[in-house]
Length: 111
Length: 326
Image 1 (cartoon, helix red, strand yellow):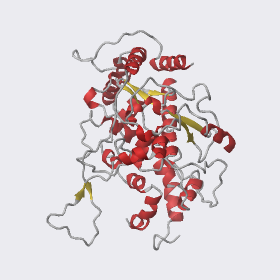
Image 2 (cartoon, helix red, strand yellow; image 1 turned 120 degrees about the vertical axis):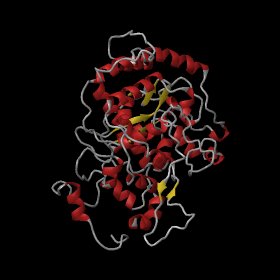
Image 3 (tube, rainbow over the protein chains, first blue to last red; image 1 turned 180 degrees about the horizontal axis):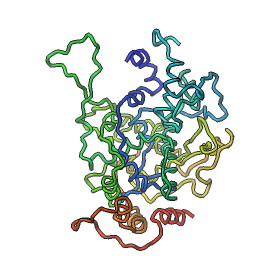
Image 4 (cartoon, rainbow over the protein chains, first blue to last red; image 1 turned 30 degrees about the horizontal axis):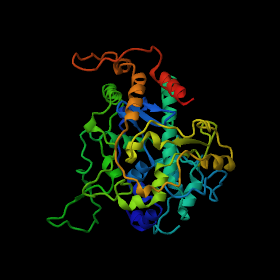
């Protein structure tokens, strides 16, 4: 809540706010539906070929359901891009170890 | 780490530094279409699952944004599931020292379509439910259960990004063209390995015209004779060549003059009727029987489909598509 209040404007500018809110929601996986639908996926069309016609997630679906950016020009590509920061991940003891090592106290807007 | 655990749902049980470059870019105010990377990951996950099903292997832990596919399926099926996405209520963020007034509600409506569809109840891997869903999708949703234009919001409850009937979007030629133009979308670009090389998936809006509020014509695959699907990308130059491949879409079109309208053409109806005859040649009951051998067939259900082909439906499906393309 504190982080959200502090960073919501920045998240909004980067079109991340809706998706971050979703990630803290308690979503239940409908495994039966997921598996049943997977049988209808066409590798060639990249669409589900259902009895009522072809259908699939589209870029408007991404924008509407997650709020993420789908229309900016992609100039980064991320191929051959090395991060400048380094974080320890391998021998850190999973997610709990990672949180213990990198969690800090103090105001949320201080790096 | 948010990208790793919550958005792309990596295979690793612990943290990785795969998404560090993207996280740095976002933190520094960079703008890039993260949504396209998400869609690419979703398509690739479905490709991997389909391959496993085709080979009769267990699906296992592939890693990938299953949650987004689940949300989309919830939305696509919400009429069938009799789920009113506008009637949901969520707890409000209320400060600890705030006392609610008598007429003040402790709940609020959903803020967007994503939040509205995320609350549909889940199910485990239940054979009976699986076979019901399979049969529903196999036989097709009834006409009044289809949600081709899922973002129909007559009371404007949610902020709309994509409303084909919105004049402002109609005039924003650039955004609309981005949404309806076929393209290659990146996969595994944040980090790759032996089992997950940098590659691409094709976005084929021509197969999904009704979801984009256009009339559906027989499907045209723009890159079928140009480039193989899912080739490994080794360097930036290769990717730029793939990303800039011209599709058959004419980018000089002025979309603001187009009138959206969900319809299908007679040519599509004939095309689909013929395809469907071949694609759905085997009764769904045979798959239900595989999943649940003790299931007893009710006497008052299931239309009988011709058992024309003994080979796998999906193997045949793939062969048929290749025959049509080439």
